Image (spheres, helix red, strand yellow):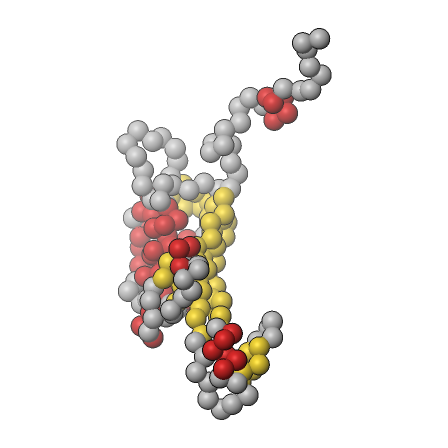
Length: 176
């Protein structure tokens, strides 16, 4: 017979009203920023801000600014709103956290007399020349995002981390 006993795709979803973007209850973005020389195998997937003491991000200041962006706000200053787009610009940022992960080149560490295990590096000599690169991650969870909103928030948090903006500047931008 030509009739099938399997359910149709529309009956499986429970509603014909599902829309991938409009029915979404939230999204998570994870941005990674490389401090230091970096690794050519991961460079394509990270924002590399370069080497030097001036390129170290102040994660505490970044988290201070990030806390100010959590909660329900109008994020117009941090996104692009196209003409004719009538979707609300008020969004609920459930989570926005900045953290640093330190990595050590195992070859340089071993040649400098360091012992490496999965939890830490222990120097066996008084001086080590190991390169310690760090990755800073920005994790955001929001109910909805404006176009380019997370790119602008991430860029703003990096400016705070570099000392070019203050956490108070972020509050001012949010209140515009």
